[in-house]
Image 1: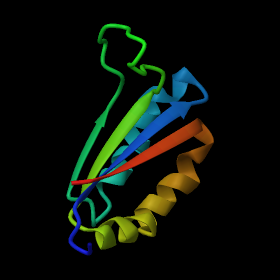
Image 2: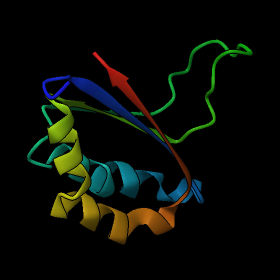
Image 3: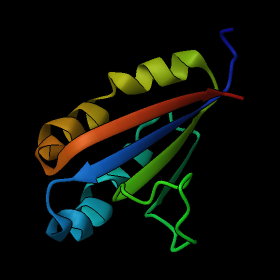
Image 4: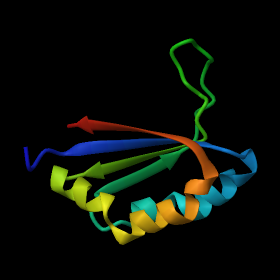
Length: 102
């Protein structure tokens, strides 16, 4: 399992819509700069058709790719990741994480 690649998807619901620009510009990109992140993609809900199975309620989604479980574990304690949490956690009212083995 050590070389198990994974996708770490993080969904953020912010307290204030007015924080969205700062969160996208300054906060979330910090996660992609962590040294163990192989690839980083950030986005907002797509303007797709409203359907019962589609959740458009989040404000920002970050998708991070890791080459191993160890890389993902190292990311969790990366100083940049911890700094992100310390500086910006006041902005979100909820966060949900989905880890996917690939």
